[in-house]
Length: 124
Image 1 (cartoon, rainbow, N blue to C red):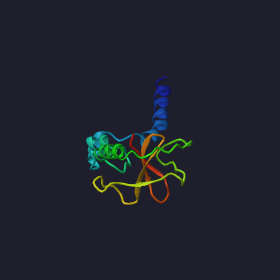
Image 2 (image 1 turned 90 degrees about the horizontal axis):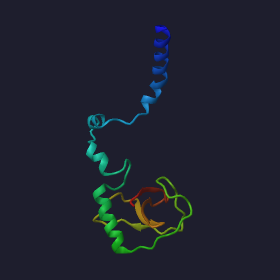
Image 3 (image 1 turned 120 degrees about the horizontal axis):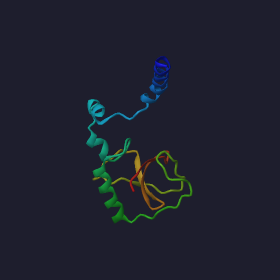
Image 4 (image 1 turned 180 degrees about the vertical axis):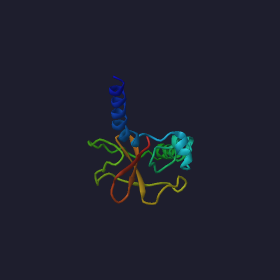
């Protein structure tokens, strides 16, 4: 009976091992890699703008009152926007990458790669 329990436990451990490889790192592990837990909370992973820049960008877009373009496709990071969606340059005071533009789609401010129209970040 003990051998059956031990072998079942060993089998379970072997099956669970590959899942551990895909687990999210802990805050302590992130800190060891040079990223603090606070930094990872300020902006989404892979974000073009930091949380502070995103707030400034939202304020800028509110002042500019750009029209919202309606798009039937699901709006998500990685989605490609249609070519007829007008893109605008990021303001100099915000900073960011030179090849990134912004637009307003389905009432959301979106950052987009200028050449490919690929969505890189959704701000709201």
